[in-house]
Length: 529
Image 1 (cartoon, rainbow, N blue to C red):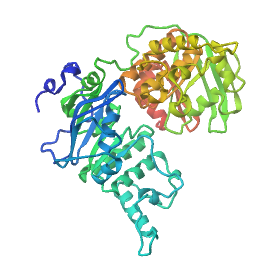
Image 2 (image 1 turned 120 degrees about the vertical axis):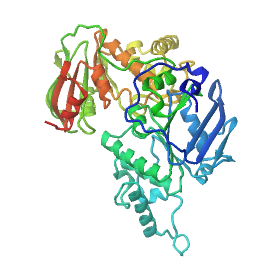
Image 3 (image 1 turned 135 degrees about the horizontal axis):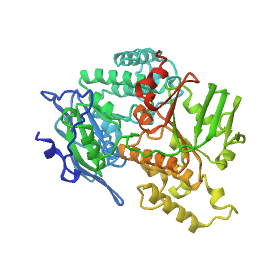
């Protein structure tokens, strides 16, 4: 296989010396299983973009092959080619060593290839069993009559086999996201899928739900299922991957086993340069001012039960806690989405009143967890989105000036380094990291004073994560305030001056300085004494 330097593509920037290796890495396979799927020399060009350039990939039975890369590196295009969602310009796909043509998703299904995407595709009002066998329902001897008993029994057997025992007659929308994901996998396995592609499968899962997913993946691997696993999370890659392939700018720049490569080398292969992890070490001290926002014994109908906390000018305050602890509900109460039933919120020394638009005008910004549904208008352009929160400020007389709008858009795109040829591109076509930058940009244009970031780095690549963390630091250095809600404990510890830990709608504790550690956050969040 050669040494690591030989496996790096010349365009990948070469090997970087690094002593830090992936934790919990899986040992390299001694004797590889048969190759189920191989991709050779795949190329795909869109107008003005070379999405894939001579990409090779092979996948063996019973292995987890991780694909990593920045948003826009070519991961999605490669997967779309494998499942027949796009047709490539050149290259070859082989299944069990035989060249195949995959022109439609139906072709991929026939060959035993299935993909589970971030946006799940279950029909909410149908039962779990109906979703598993949708379009392939077992029939009785009577024409057009579905054998519901057999369908239920078969669905229950598949789900039990991968670790989920549930009422298969229940509606799909009654399940938690984690269980809906398992049903999607059961649906693929019911089609005799031998190759399973998982695209950011833990993006909406808690740590406990993710652990259950990993256990299921281990069972599938043991049964010989070949799995392509796409994720930005290094700890998941170390836990699951037998091999890692890194794409950058549409090219394969690295392929290795986890035991052969360090985290730093993967990052450099992805980004093209070293990227520092969030850390307060070496960061210049900055002055912290008076409290700009204070919550005193705040209760809401959404589960908050006596929240008391404060945020001062020039500091990053974190909100930590398990899923359902009330983190997002705090943000919604501050932003005026959910009414406060008792207690008070003070802003700049006065009671915070008014609806959400008034709070926006007063200087409060929310970068929501679901940027596509709540932060952007995906069908509009980047320029239009960048003005959504500041139109009243930029055009106080309500007279729209296209030249002024274009100027603001160009400046925002340049400052935030949004990867786009121009501001008239539809924002829905941007990668996740660039969409997040656009959401942040609209609030910068509104001259916000308090920025609430709800899971700001979820679903984006490591290079964009570093840029967003740097932006938050720059905001507070200018005297603004940041409230950061995150499930990424290293980010909270590395970025925040103080962290409030929530549990069941209450503040379980406040951590700062030497007390602010990942272990301390977990103990408070999980009620460990």
